[in-house]
Image (spheres, rainbow, N blue to C red):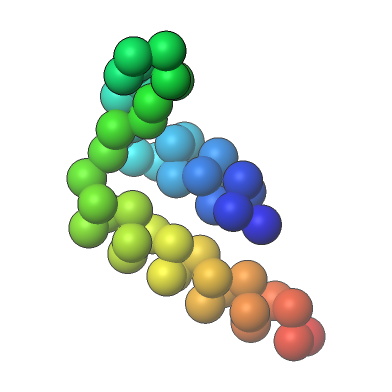
Length: 50
């Protein structure tokens, strides 16, 4: 589920890909990420109950 949220978020929001040390990173505005995830989960919950 979280992978789906991340993929959808990256399609619709600015995400900067980079590295910190050897780790791949994705940088984005936290508020946008939280709001997007909340909306995505609310919509997922509605479609799951139908």
